[in-house]
Image 1 (cartoon, rainbow, N blue to C red):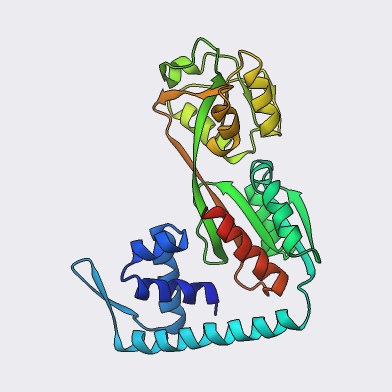
Image 2: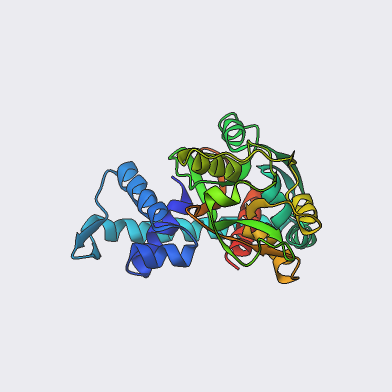
Amino acid sequence: MDTNVLKTFIAVCEYSGFSAAAKELGYTQSTVSSQIKQLEKELDVRLFDRYYHKINLTEKGVLVLQQARNILKAQAKMLDSLNSAESIEGEIRLSMSSSVCSRYFKNDFLRFHHQYPEIKVEITENGTEQMFDKLRKNETDLVFTLDRHIYDSDFIICAEQEEQVHFIVAADNPVAGCSWKLSEISQNEFVLTEQAMSYRKILNETLASQSLEIRPVLEIGNPLQICELVKNSSLLSFLPDFISEKYVKDGQIKRLDVAGCPVTVWTQLLLHKNKWRSPAINVFIEFYKEVMQR
């Protein structure tokens, strides 16, 4: 039984609702609902009665709540005993996209390393499909995805965050500051990430739905290098806001308002439901849950 699901169940009880629990945990409401359904299926009981948008624990639900709290207390006591006996050490194999790597593995990883110097992290950059294939084969311990929202009963969502994606342009480019249609903006010259990148795929699908296409003059995997190229040229690009954020704040790049192209992706930290969570994996998850909720 996944203790993360028990934590979600307890949060729903304590905050008297799915949406309030989702906000507190940093999940989507659909993720919370899916985890509760998973727990009900696993235990073969109905945990809540639902009346007029309100929820109440069933008799079995009250019993499960008591036992869930006992399980988490026992787990915390065990981990405290293990962690106090010696410093946490071990290796973590992590798969992620280059965009996520550029966001979370600068200052944040240095803080993590300072707190846990005996934990070694091995990072490989992969596309989403390859990440999940490696999770299923136990060739990686955790994955950091940047894609459409993913929920699969084989995987546990440890943390997640919604991300916006925009067209960007140099601040002094004449197209900055105007509203555009997708058919108009697609006529410009672009530098884009490789086609396997999730938000590039979503952009291509959106364009195709309107019988449009962007043929970039350059494709490159490093999103920060794309920002450097955009700020110093007339090229446009399409990147998540967290990548262009510093350039926007510094007045070097502007985001464009393009009608008909609302794109949202999700950063999610996941592991396989059957994966043994070592002390090293546990502290890594807790550290990055806090980082993503900032």
